[in-house]
Image (cartoon, rainbow, N blue to C red; front, side, top):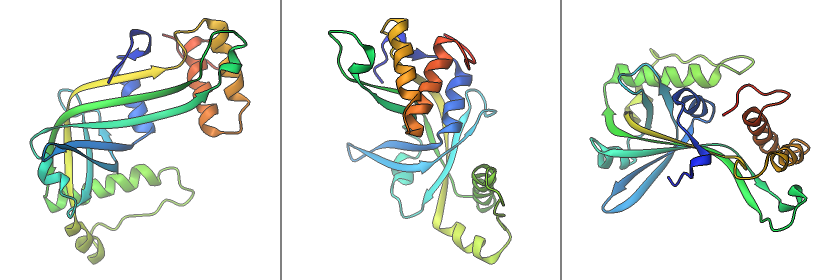
Length: 213
């Protein structure tokens, strides 16, 4: 990923936080000399030595798991993003742009075909994604239906070798312009716009800030 110095984020905890908060990723591998991608919910295991790993599953009918086994793959996670109008800068000689946060993860793809481990992966998915539901759905891993359905999936682990983070948030503009962008985004009805405003405000400091770079 092309990352100009002002936009580069290397703090692993922040990168991992973005993955967990935006866990529907794009898994990219090579197939017959061409890129092949699957859109998948992917869980993060921070404790896996030495650099953490990604864990998930895909349909057994998906050829990617066979093609990617033992090879380096790329997982892309996109955080909040928003269009930035040049009118917000209230300045001359400016152009439109797009603000966004993203993490790229590189690592070795390992297949998981053990039934008990697959059932545990599904159980972990359910626990993670049902946690915010008013009445969380329970996964019966011992039931006949679960035992049947698990035959249709293959699990995987991506052992992380490298991770990159890009927070493109108008850092190449003066602080007053950044603050104007924050105000414009925060006034929007779009949840994504407001999310970008929050990330920008956290970075530049001020009311509601949690950290700065």
